[in-house]
Length: 311
Image 1 (cartoon, rainbow, N blue to C red):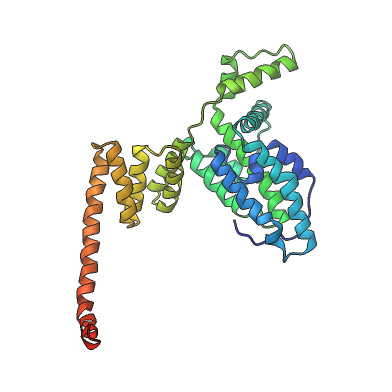
Image 2 (image 1 turned 30 degrees about the vertical axis):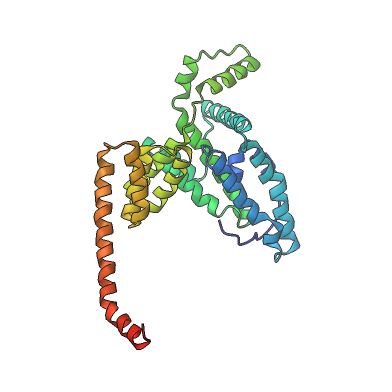
């Protein structure tokens, strides 16, 4: 996200309603994001919208940025920064998705959301994260971009939640929903929403995305995901092994060795870890020989200089 400043500023009060429905869309953050990731994104946005960053812009743009920050971004962050309010917001979003799906009204208009609705299940997570990141990158560049991004991200989040819910009709029958009254039915739906909400393993989600990036040979993104995973599970052998492999391919042998050695400490019999440790050692020896060879070629010149100056 670049700090290029807003253009064509104009605050739309309709954004407040959209933001209340989906605070994740406001921050341009995944509905699976944990507190650390949410805070990081909020700080990025606040930096872009801060008055000091916009001091060279005209008054209209400064006023617009201030309204977006105070009336939309800050309230959204307040709802997502703590687990309790974040869970409540997500439960409300899931309930709305169920209602739209039952009424056959879940019909996204943006191509990205339509594509997310169609793609095979194994591709859902990576497509969602990649598309979200791409949209979020331009979210705060202009009033028009913010408006379109807010709607597009909201549709993307809605479809993603729908893809993660499975067969809604079967699930509702299993939980014994009854339609005696609108009030009672809503209460049962809310209860079942809480019961069906699994405990999210954020570290494993980072790991899944990292594996996908590794197969795509996108090693920088794999490293980024695995760093986040290791913050949550610092003693996970597989995470250390994967990031070690990613560093090895990038020829960052010192980093590769550190993580592979840690993986070996956690699981001394891990065959892949042992294989890559040997490969790292061989690569470092080759690098050292190459460096020594270059030094030996240059050595006569330095020896002559030392003799010249009495060294």
